[in-house]
Structure formats: structure tokens, C-alpha cells
Image 1 (cartoon, rainbow, N blue to C red):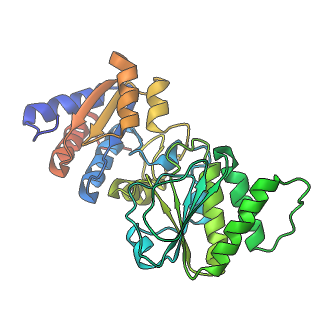
Image 2: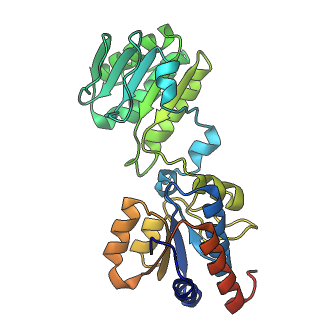
Image 3: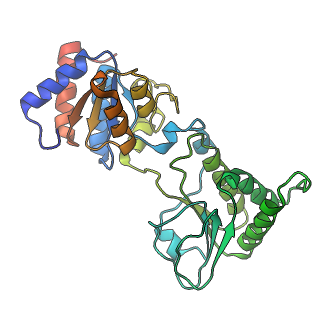
Length: 305
């Protein structure tokens, strides 16, 4: 249901949601805040699980990044502020080339195509990302390192990176942790950037992270960006890597998914795997239509507790 919904469409949607054993509210990709608020109204009416699909919610360490505080910026800051850009184990094709005065260091198993007069590649295996971040952070903090226990090549790369960072005026570290299921790699770069930011201006540009209004709405309404097991204003439990949308669908812990607007590709694949085991109610990203669905459910079940 992508076009404007008719009254009959809304009646069917409300009936399906009200009859379900457990509902998941998903989708909301790029939806405005008003739509997200109305979707949360529906979720509360049926006590649904809610997950708009932030990568954070599928990581085991989900809330850790928020607790230690990520220092991030928009991609435009790359051009306007940074004189050193570190491409950290990623291929930042979505990031525009910076100014001529920028130095760029690509860190990872392969080089990336970057225009500019001062570009270097520091080759290192992909599985060394966490250890390398910790080594660079230790060097910046002037913490003693047991060189006998450290990989010599990783330590050499870490020293090169730390020296380049300390010689820069402003450092931008570009990452892409969309497929970091555990979250340790994402945590390690957040910690590194925070340490570096205490010495000079520094920030991370996390490619692939979603910053939709729906994620903000869930945060202030339910206390988390998603992976909320039950929509309750008194505080639904935040269970990252447990009640994120894909896992709930794959474990068949929901029998109905309400997709508002667009769902993430991962959620769509999970719904396809579920086949007919999970009913799918698709509603447009229309706040008025969603409020009508919530009102219809309220009429059947009474106001939510």
C-alpha cells in the first residue's frame, strides 16, 4: 500500500493489526517526524515491537556507542574543516573529494580511488581494524605498549597514523560499519576519535548510518533508537541484537509486520524469507492515515494501557 490509502484499506489494516498476536512496526526510512510519531501511536495501540532499522539496533554492543559519545559530523565537514582525512577500512565512494590542501590516508587491505595530490595507502588486513584503533589510541594517549606482544606491522602502521594525526590541524576519520554485527569495530573508532578530539579538532564520518527522524522519535519516546520489545511510553526495553526487526522476523516472534513507507533492504529480505508466516501490512508514510489506523484500533480494543 504505497499510494493514498482508502477508508477500506485503513479498516483492513486496523483489523489485521488488532487481531495479530504480536506486531512489529518497521520501515520509516526517510520519513518525517510527524509520520514517525503517528506510527508510534499505532505501535502503542497494539503493544508492538518497534525497530525503524538503525544499524545500531542489530549490534550486540548497541547502546555502548551512545554511552561513550560518538563525535561525528556531516560529510560536508570533510571538505570544509579537515586537513587530514583517514579512510578507515572503507571505500568511501559516497564522499566527495576534498580540497587540494587535504592529505588523505587510506587504511585497509586495499587502496581506494581518491583524487588529490597527497594520498597514501597503509596496507593492513581487515581483521586488524580493532587492534589498530586501540594501538593508535594508546600512542596518542602516550600509554606504554608491550612491543613484544604487538604485531610489528600493525604497530608501524599505528605509529604512522598517530604521527600524521598529531601533525594535522583537524582530522576526519571516515568509517563504514554497516556490516559490523558485534559492534566492536564501531566502538573502537568512536573511542579513538574521542581521544584524538581531546588533542585537536577531530570527528568521524560514519557512512551508512541512518539519521532518520524516526530514530530520533523512538529515542525520545521510548528511550532507544529501535529494537524496542514493546511500545510503551513508560519505557520499553531496548534489546539490541535481540529484538531488532530482522531477528524478530527470522525467529517468527512476530506474526504481523507493519511497514510504514519504505523498509530497509535487510528487513525486506527477512520478510521474504518468512513467507506467509508473517503477515505484512504496508501503509503509506502519511501521518493522517496512520492516526486514523490508531483511532480504529483504539475503538476495537479500548485505549492502550
